[in-house]
Length: 168
Image (cartoon, rainbow, N blue to C red):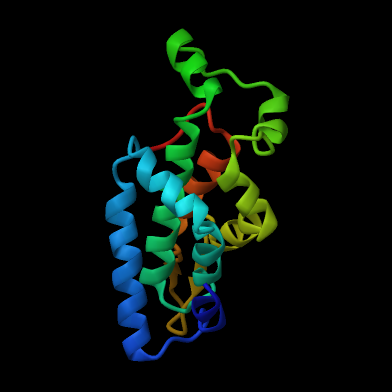
């Protein structure tokens, strides 16, 4: 963890290839949102802290994959919560005000706790861009601006704050 954390912002080419391959493998492992063995293993290694630190990297591909893994992990965790099963059984997707505060602090939300400890929600929110954001080009035209990881960061945040309706 320490090596990744210290090199998160700028990687050498060799280390970037290794890090991208590792995150790509995590993305494949977390694609099965019912695999609790993977979830337990990654939780125990504080993977959220590492992924959030990797979001500081300048590589858009790295950011997008990290956001995707976070979204998958938070969906995996949410699917293990009693509130998910109650909502799914009742087909009731209404939420109370308490869900947004208390479920991110519930005992069985280890990943949510890791997110709070490393200020992960704030980092993910910093990656969001407005769908209507534009920049003015030198030729007098404007162009749409959309961050590479905008969709995956939004999915991770939804899975963090609204666990009874995880987006897979």
